[in-house]
Amino acid sequence: MDNNEKIGFHKGALDCLLKERSEFSRILSIVDALIQMHTKALSDAGVDIKAELEKAQAAAQNAAAQNTAQNTQNPQAKQEDNFMNIDSAIKESKNNF
Image 1 (cartoon, rainbow, N blue to C red):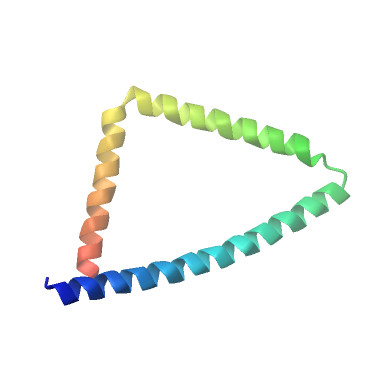
Image 2 (cartoon, rainbow, N blue to C red):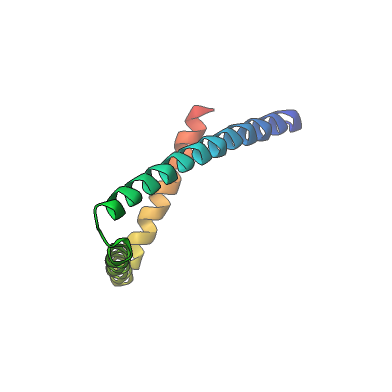
């Protein structure tokens, strides 16, 4: 690849990533608005939001601890999965160009 092709490739990649980031930001703002709407509705219905949030956080921490325990039992398999995902992503990106 000559220098002009590399520059064009990277400019195109940046343009695409900036558009992706902009779209992601838009989606995130929509999700935040929906969260606020549901939180208000639950609070109007008499649900203790803080208690529910603490329960959800505890459940997430337990799930994360279980995942960590599973990964420490067989870290080689996890690393191989990550490399396989990276390899397939590289191959797919090469096929797209």
